[in-house]
Length: 339
Image (cartoon, rainbow, N blue to C red):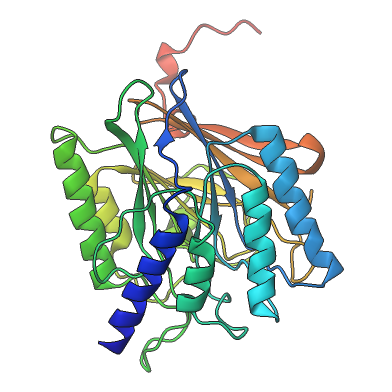
């Protein structure tokens, strides 16, 4: 009960501080909506290596001009935690773009709890999340149509927690049954509002699902991008991917956590993709080309999107159209080739 009261106070304070700034998310006149995903900033106040993360964020946003920035966890990696998080939040503020965040497994290791970090961050957020009681840091963002206020797409942001608390199952924690129930309820509600048709949606959280490993290891899957370390996912599969598959709305799941992976793979009709490590040299990172971001472009009224990686100095890698670039085709129906 005490924890619930604390969470409600945090939410109330955040709403009071940020309500005047919050903006509706909306498709552009051309029917597109662009998202930039930053992940694993591992920012440390006063560490010169950490400034590289903020510089790359500014460079990417200036180049891409997105409609939304999503930061998928591990934003800070040292004390003083409050000043480190304020530096990150102020940088995000300065970009002039609506942004939201999810927590990583390291964020609360440096002196501030998730409740305290949540309160600090949400005084800066300028988007309008929808919360349901008991979900804590899970929320939905609606994207309105280019010509009206109907909801045309949705963004699910979830907290993927930290280490497992089970004595029988070690490793990282998993998305809980209550989170899966929350997702199902939200998905059904949005589907109902959309005339019974699943709403084109994306999901963002920090720690990848076990399906990231399963899909990569199957010989008949397309894999685009780098894998330079094992997938550090939960040892227990709690069923979130299965729920999203059955929900029929989520087209892509985007995570971070594994700094040396940036690959995308299609699994059972859902794209599973890593963001690009965004941090500086405060922790390990070995991908050729340095830090960067993932870019995603939705299309109003369509179950398709583009995604690519943007690195420093304008370098673009692994540009994809989903699901087109992952579809098998009938070779007999291709145009005749002349050698």
